[in-house]
Image (tube, rainbow, N blue to C red; front, top):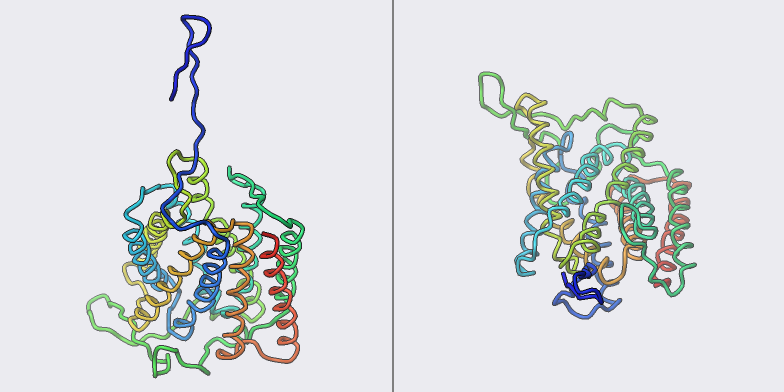
Amino acid sequence: MIETATSHPNVTSTIVPLVTLQPSNSTKDEAYIGFIAATIACVFFGTNLVPVKRIDTGDGMFFQWVFCSAVWCVGLVVNVIQGYPKFYPISMLGGFIWCTGNVVVVPVLKTIGLGMGMLFWGSANLLTGWFSGRFGWFGLRPQDRFTRPALDYVGVALGFLRLVLFSFVKSDVMDRPVVTERSPLLSGETTEGTINTKYERDTTFAREESDHSWVDNLSPVQKRILGILMALFAGCMYGLNFAPVLYAQQHYDGATDNGLDYVFAHYSGIYATSTLYFILYAMYMKNRPKVFPRAILPTLLSGAMWGVAQTAWFVANQRLQESISFPIITTGPTLIGALWSVLYFREIKGTRNLLVLAVAMVVTITGAVLTGLSY
């Protein structure tokens, strides 16, 4: 704070400096680094759930806790590499928002499948993140660094169109309660007969328990409707998870513009929230939560891959901007996830479904390219 004397001898005026972002020690802010980071994010986001797709995860609560443990470990490594930057607690709010949406991922996989789930939550993620960044929701500054803004609008409009197209694609998961045609990528055994440790009232021995979930009791139509709604909810939460970090960057004095400085706080929020949800779940289950030992290593791998992808997204947000990175990073993984569903998991079948999916992919790629050219 600086005080300056005015013409009157007994009066002083106070000048309060504006909050500015402090440049970090990172490399030059060049756009191509942002596009490389966006590509890495697309590949890892599109593949991170593949290791657990055929693994028994029950209702998903144990899966999420182990998954988020791996995410936090990635954040710890990034924090060490960054030299222990200042911890902004508001960034943890973003982790809470993301983790709340991620609770429904396993039920989504069990109702509409990997490919369809990614397509729907990716579309909702795109629209929510783009609108919040472009128009400055939640106290954020509107982002307008465009050379061709019309291309950005067209790209987002195509993203909305693909959401409509994907709603006409039917996943094979909705018609069958148990999937057995493909075994897990990380195991040479089928997923039947997975051991689930469950303590009985007077004994401590483990017994076999099937991967039964409440969604298995739903009809195909109910699975489709509920799966789509849960995927849209998750996508909206994903689309808002960067808002607290951006708010800190724009409003906190001394905050750097390097997104990597906020990764550890963000991931700490994710782990804390997942732990809280798992404790509440264990209390609801009367200290008998469904635990699947065979899912631990695949889930840790899945969480680590997601942690790398999200870290790359932080870089892309910094080098580009949200209204550029969101359309690209929310469309790329959906294509990769759809390819896994078609070529490996065989969840999307039939000439009509494949034709609609192909058209949706063309629309998706076109939208991402136009968005990139708008920068």
